[in-house]
Amino acid sequence: MFLAEFFGLFSLSAFSMWAFLMAFFFNIFVYSLDVKRDTTLLLSSFIMMISYTATDYIFTWLSYYDTTYFDWAIYDISTILCLAIAFSFIKKTTPSFLYLLIGLSVNSIFFLLMYLDVYINKNLESWWFWSVYQFSVNIIDFLMVVALIVDRDFLGLHGIKRKLTRLFKTSKTQPTT
Image (tube, rainbow, N blue to C red; front, side):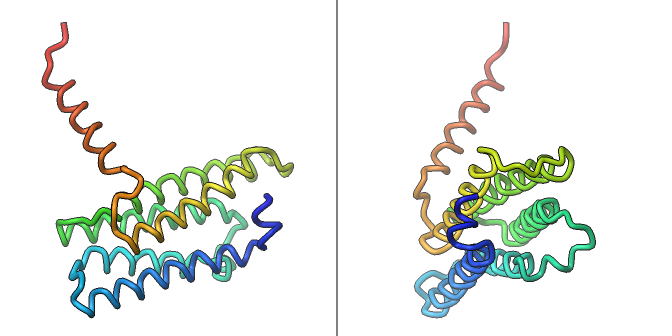
């Protein structure tokens, strides 16, 4: 786990928490200046800031069992549910919303796979997946923060979503022979 050894486990966690806090403050600032009055973006950044603050390494001592990866998966799934509930009330989204849902989903899958590897399979020897996990989770966190700040489809996820939606709609309407 190169990143954890180089930067330290706690500093990466603190950086993610700080980055989501700054994204929330940025969105409050933009909202208060009346530059962008998008409550969905403000609410999404608030939910992400609360989620990452509550699930920081500092607060993992609240876990009853020593299953940190499983706890993080549950936290991410809970955050997805909170975002979905917020969406159900507001009924509109921003470009960053899809990035948050995909990022949290991929992170929770990585957490569950690490939980299976470390706690179920009892693997304590570092292998390539651990490095992929460490790199991916941190990059995804960074991309979610960027999505909350720029609020643009900078990776083209919405274009891919539209193409897949059209593909599935046309495959359902065409009769199979």
